Amino acid sequence: MKKIILNISIILISLLITLSCSNKYGGYEKSENNFYFKYLNIGEGKTTPKFGDYIVVDIAYKTINDSVFFSGTKKFKLTKPKFKGDIDYCFAMLTKNDSANFIINANDFFTKTINSKLPSFFNLQSDMLVSVKLLEIIDSKSYKKQKAEFLSWVEDFSEYEKLLLQHYIEGEQIAVSPSITGLYKLTKVKGNGVKVQKGDTIIVHYEGMFLNGKYFDSTIKRNAPFEFVYGTEWQVVKGLEEAIGKMSEGENAIFIMPSEIAFGKKGSSTGIIPPFTPVIFKVNILKIKKATKNLEKKQAQLN
Image (cartoon, rainbow, N blue to C red):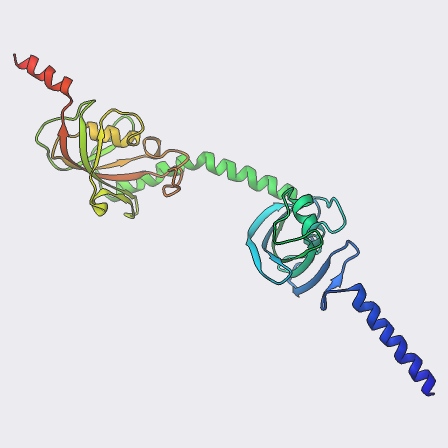
């Protein structure tokens, strides 16, 4: 009897040693596709994504010691794995709202999956930890439909802008007619009659704002008037150049302009003003320094 118990104990110990050798990461299971995995949360989804589907994931890439070197939300097409241990096998195991940790070979991920160099904090044998939550699965047909709808929405957005602008003009009970470009001018303080001409140096205070009243720029708040030569390219947006050309020294006015003469269908280069956004500029011409040729022309007219 003792011999039987001893034999069973030896078998159990051998089995434990075998298991510990075959899986070096406790709490993880080893996939037949040469990576380790551990589910953290099981979501309500019933189907896993197919290769060719688009998926949205919250993902964090970490060293095996749990030090994060990238995290974020990504949307991408799930492609057919190219090798054993490919991370795409990991994504294909999840259903919606599943969360899991995966351990994959770092060198394979960087050199084969993303075609990059292996970072210096890894060596060729290093593994890395990938934490994933699958947020959404979009089949390829639905994705193409969504993309087409989005592009159509962008194309139609100029019409939506016109509607917004119209509602603003009506809501503010603005009675003046716009210029041919769609610029509205509301004079607050009249100037001294000295008109702006090309080549003049203009010193101006301006404040830019959205239709909701939120400011995106102000020389007043910066306490730094803007000085530029009128008529010089790329100094101000087209609408502001047109606006200043309608003013005289000392004048204070408000201008409402559509995106076509403001920041256009791409928005501002800084990203502060979105595409197809009508804007308002409050403008005060502090001083006009007349160009020499204009002065000479006036003197000739007087003589």
